[in-house]
Image (tube, rainbow, N blue to C red; front, top):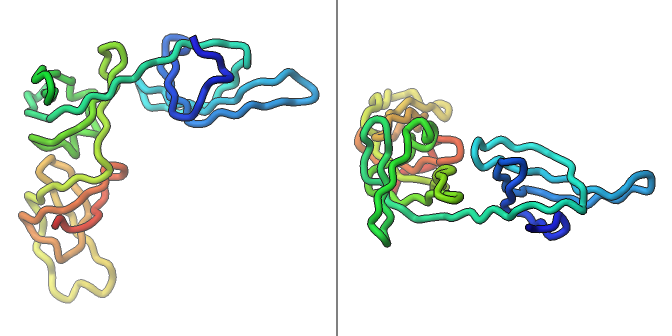
Length: 186
């Protein structure tokens, strides 16, 4: 058990059956009332962020979050299969758990699986990924008075807006945070 006074940013705790990562904490002392601690936490199961107030005398169980580097192997339709590069164990994650992340995963890619007591909380993607364009319209000459963009479909099925000079078959860098075009791949 860990005291509220020992909490730090980035630490994970178990509270009321949920697993929270502490984003911010603040000890508040008031002349009118007893001291309390204000927390801003992220629920690691569903990703919601909320603020809560706790008593400084409370104690919580520290949640040890395990991060395992794995390689994405293939998709069976219902599940995504990953392999631990050290033990060669395979892990299946339902595709419903990876609704957003599957737009950026390609075969052979290294990702970090986030787990708590053998429960898969999700995957941690790199900030940017390189993906190949499989379908886009050709550039139209004389259409470059402004920063004109066109739609492109990537190998994962994600549709992004790219500049007109990007052509079919090119590899581009895409931000995993917002799914936007960043640059051409080198």
